[in-house]
Amino acid sequence: MSRESAIAEIERYFDAGEFLVDLARRVAIPTESQNPERGGALSDYLTKELQPSLEKQGFKCTVLSNPSPKGGPFLVAERIEDSALPTVLTYGHGDVIRGQDEQWRTGLSPWTVTREGDRLYGRGTADNKGQHTINLAAMQAVLKIRGKLGFNLKVLIETGEETGSPGLKEVCAQNKALLSADVLIASDGPRLQPQLATMFLGSRGACNFDLTVDLRKGGHHSGNWGGLLRNPGIVLAHAIASITDVNGKLRIPEWRPDSLTPSVRAALDGLVVEGGEDGPGIDADWGEPGLTPAERVFGWCSFEVLAFVTGNPDKPVNAIPPRASAHCQLRFVVGIEPNDILPALRRHLDAHGFQGVQLAAARDGYFPATRLDPDHPWVRWTAASIERTTHARPAILPNLGGSLPNDVFADVLGLPTVWIPHSYAACSQHAPNEHLLAPVARDALRIMAGVFWDLGEPGSPH
Image (tube, rainbow, N blue to C red):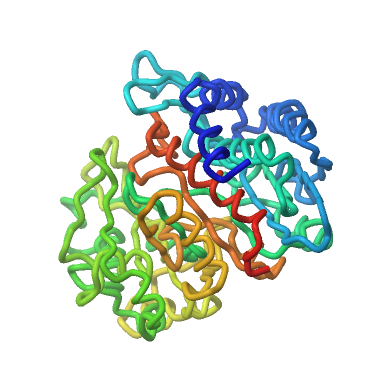
């Protein structure tokens, strides 16, 4: 009975193909939360797939209905060995985005796991079925070798993350005692580099909004009226251009963090952002000058234009369009006042002569920013456990560059939050041909078996 035995057991589990069997069974359940017809699949994933597996491992399972009409059910599983032991909450989501079946490469299906070389293709392999399957399998390996966990474990699986986690905050607020723990240790998102074990401690916030210039009822011939009528596309383009300089540096003071804290700067020092062989190259001169790429994406804010429409792009005609609109986003970090993001933009537009540009918050387009101090005891403990397994220090990111509902765990449940991602940036998670890298999955299984083993040993900071 040893840590090495638990890691050897999880290596055997992967090498014998058992991980692929478990993952394939889960991927085959079409849990598309964006598809209203998949409500039965969401429920089946919890009650017919995960619940029986967890109950075999001695977990007491409860399925909670969603207080939001837009969301699917929740599964809470708990194995309480001793109230005096540390308690860990882990989280995952069983839903996936739409399969986009017809867009996958020939020979691939979103609902069938297909291995080609190091790639395991299938919808949910990276986001998030593969990731929580890794964590649950690592837990099972520890139970098999030790006969017990040596700590208390609670598992929360939701089925609506891909639609903004409706009802998650309310369910956690209503079930604080059921979900009480010392720490959240969960997995989602990508590693900094495919081969580098990574931790992140929160997420950047996201504020989506629409900018619109609506000048008249219909289009007018560009030959008869060109030079006489204001073009809404040009007006909106100039309004957007006023928000940053030509290289993307933010010009709105309220959208610029005061500074990177010493602990954040120290955590990001020397880290290299790299998305694997299919990842795009980084534009070195884009964004805030004087910051490294890691500091720009994990420690700063970024403004993005996600869509811009004027006229009919598919069938343009020789007419000045009456209207232009853009769907935009600010990714923001802790230190930005979230309630002042859109008012600050309104003040900026008005001050630059764009009073006619309409501004509206996008529905379901907001996530708060969260961040655990990189010097927190749980961060140091987890990093030490990972280093013990991999013989290399993991990358520690103060927050994910993207957004996820970490505020529910940090603010509603009041937990320190440590995420250990098992995917990589070029995994196509919201696109056709989503995949998980087999070497990353095997490495992640070893890491999580080590973390769960160490949680059962003396010395965790509960």
